[in-house]
Amino acid sequence: MSTKSLISIIDDDEGMREAIGGLMRSLGFAVATFPSAADFLACSNFPETSCLIADVQMSGMTGIELYRQLRGSGFSIPTILITAYPNDSDRARILADGVICYLSKPFDEGALLRCISAALKRVDPAEGHA
Image 1 (cartoon, one colour):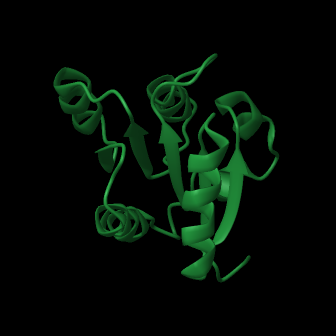
Image 2: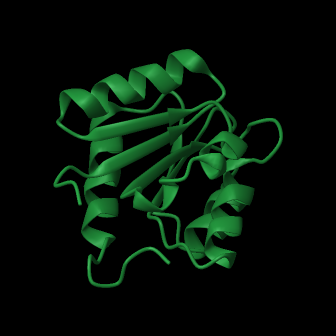
């Protein structure tokens, strides 16, 4: 098992995906990026993800739908949702469902790092993801 935490980033905006990925790599994290939720789910090592950062508004499956599907399938991957279209009722509902953070684009790098820190503290190696 790798000693580096794997951060998986799903965003259909390539620029955003690469910017977050570059920041995470510069901080020493292992990074996997995906243009869609379907691509993430098709990756055989997605359960190794220590923290998931997903865009809310994506074609196909949204970030919220992905989070709920993962939870329903028994995967407890700490998740941060990001959105260019914040909605207070979605925020309240999804945070109550267990999402670590719900950030509005553009977000402050410090806010994202605080969310990553909170997500990684939530990972219990003895518990696993499934």
